[in-house]
Length: 64
Image (spheres, rainbow, N blue to C red):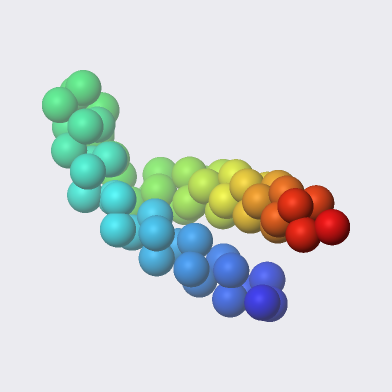
């Protein structure tokens, strides 16, 4: 899978949970502005890429 394909999948996952995150932030009194979303999406993508690579390495170890 290409890196850009993974990034798109990770973004789709993030968008799936964005309404829930927004609701929790609203309840906590934190306003979620569009210009603030991008840095968090970039961070989310980095976390997902690392988790993906960790899972892939784990699967390779189990297949040995």
